[in-house]
Image (spheres, rainbow, N blue to C red):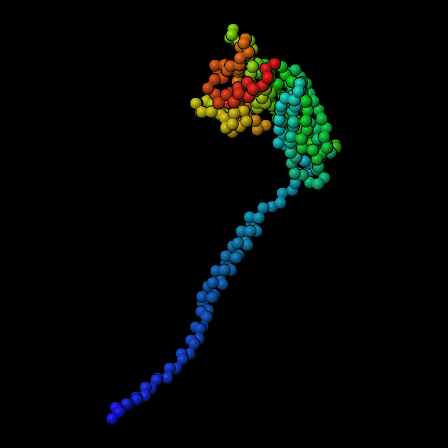
Length: 264
């Protein structure tokens, strides 16, 4: 006989889906607080902007020369003086009619004057090259000229040094100083001298004869000190460094360049 098989039926419970919950009503009190705080912040920002907004100052009626600088170098048998400047802001009618450039050397007295257009911001003038052992002290002045008006000069002093050295040793037939000449700014107010006194043992140089510490940088952005190197020519034609120019990296570089030049 075959066994009897009974099949039971299983009833599944019917699940009812949950209804989505409705969002809670807005909290009127919180919204009122947020709105009030935002309004106060906006009012404070507006008040600060209005009270601290810089007023547009009226421009001067006339433009004047400022930031006068000179760059001096040797060119052939002349001393080339490149004078540069800037002009202050002014109203449209205050543009200068012309620019007057003047270079005045103290000793021997000499004055050079040049007239340039108003759009020019640099000019080049030439002075006689000083002989070795002399220092040229001069001042460069620029004036923005306006018809019928008295204009102020803007001036900056400068100097150019050409050292000289005699053959102190009997064995040397000639002493050569390198570099031949350098523009050295005046030490206005003795700032560099004071810095050297208060910083004993420290070097004034950032890059020798190019960039010095701020206290030793003059009105033309040039160092107020200079480094010169002396080399000797012996009777047999050999070139040697003098004692004062030995153990100096800067003089070593100049000596290498000098020895590669043809001796005349």
